[in-house]
Image (cartoon, rainbow, N blue to C red; front, side):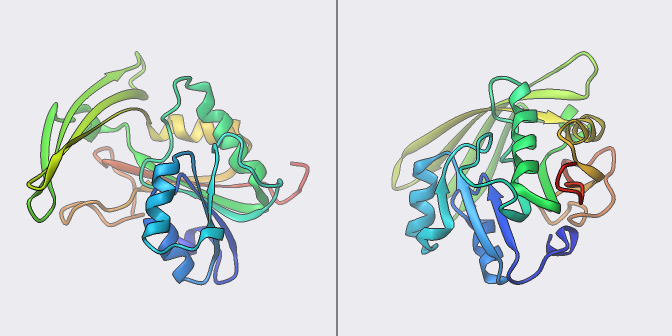
Length: 231
């Protein structure tokens, strides 16, 4: 990721939608001046309990980041932290906010579920291990727009374990094709856009950030804020 973003130790990075901080921790370990932004106070509490430093964690909305413009050398939105707003127009609002947050010439990486062939055969029910004696169970419904370039995934996840009552989480997520994500990034003012395989999620998946395939289950797109401050 650091190679894609053309940054190294000392660079300022915004982890937009950092959750409990699993990527933020790695960015900090690489020597970046990384800041995690998340709307959920509960997620940020969990990040603090895990030992992440308080100054690196900020609560706020990715559509209106609480930072001055041009505060960061790079912005990362990883592992499906994008596409949850009720109004699809807000996705473009968030991308424009990412662009404003970047210094001229800075890069964004956006990684999420790919609206490709794999999504079209998404299972209605799925179960998988989350740890010793802990199981996750999904119920999924995926509705497509007429052009099949954008879908809405309604997902209910139940986490079951032997020592506690089941926990249930419900989400609604918009997923995009390569073409649609590219158009959104262009509309937000990004240039030099490229899309590729997203983060590897299982041993049989294609390597992370390799060539994007029609059946890729995840997608990563990069885009650069133009080098001129007024662009």
